[in-house]
Length: 338
Ligand code: NDP
Ligand code: GDR
View 1: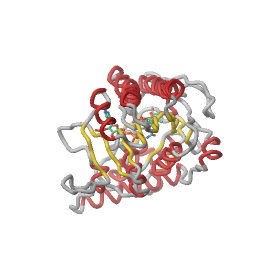
View 2: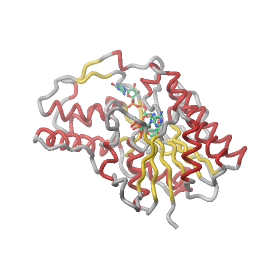
View 3: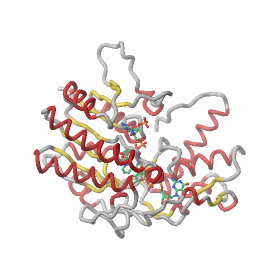
């Protein structure tokens, strides 16, 4: 029997890679998308199927994590085997500007989804996209036993979602898991996250379209991995006999400055000639260092990272250079298929 999955956040970086993975495994994939005044499906356009086609393996549905009734209706109708809750206001800096909205979507949205599963009485497994941001000020290395000390409205909302997921597992015997994923990037990463902001700027500076890149704190330490590998871990977590929570990380650390230097030098550029400081990109409270210990994921899921941050920087720079070259040659490259 074909398995089915519902993905919230299907139009995001992770949603697009997870959709590819599940379609490759033969799933029917349902995606929750938000109504938008302009197209927001660029990352999954290459997977799009004509809605008039009879047998479809990818079906999109309009709904929103803010709309609990729509979630109940959707779950009752679709009865998916697996639910992946990737939808969120996911930008940490933005969460300081929109704390209540972030709390509503990134926090309460998860509870609405869990409650929709419970209320509709369906038998489904749910993956919650938890985050290393929950560790915040807790010193590295961080693993599943590390206490949370979030440093942003986003981190606080993710802690609420984490505990709601654990609570529904304990209270209702739901197969509910938290993947505590450390930063993961790709050519499909949103353009305002620091790695992609850097690699896009490298391509534009190299092409003479931009001279300066404005950034905030360069001292923050992050554990950057490669997004297509991280969605494999999500799927593996839902295939276990027993639900549990897992850290997913590379265990290697770099500062924003290290990533910057690697990205610029991979295109033959010197970052110090181009980077300027702008306090606007600093956070009122920063997360200084995140370095994950993914021993449990390796031991129980057989998951191991393959691409480490220096290679990741190269992959992203190359992709942005090719995309820009194609754009400048007049072709429109809307989706990177890597
Ligand atoms: P993105 O920001 O790329 O994608 C977020 C997705 O959520 C988009 O599809 C977005 O839709 C959707 N979304 C936003 N608001 C709502 C809403 N109100 N209702 C329904 N959907 C909504 O995030 P990533 O793919 O990078 O991350 C996926 C998840 O994993 C997120 O929950 C994130 O917080 C979490 N995470 C990410 C990590 C990372 O390093 N990437 C690390 C740890 C956790 P639209 O396209 O319309 O904006
Ligand atoms: P993060 O990622 O906050 O870790 O959250 P981001 O790339 O936004 O920031 C990483 C670090 O870079 C510093 N920084 C800047 N960040 C941005 N965005 N823009 C800048 O100009 C800039 N200059 C310096 C930041 O201060 C920070 O220290 C990501 C998101 O994907 C979350 O959803 C996810 O949960 C966590 O990763 C794990």
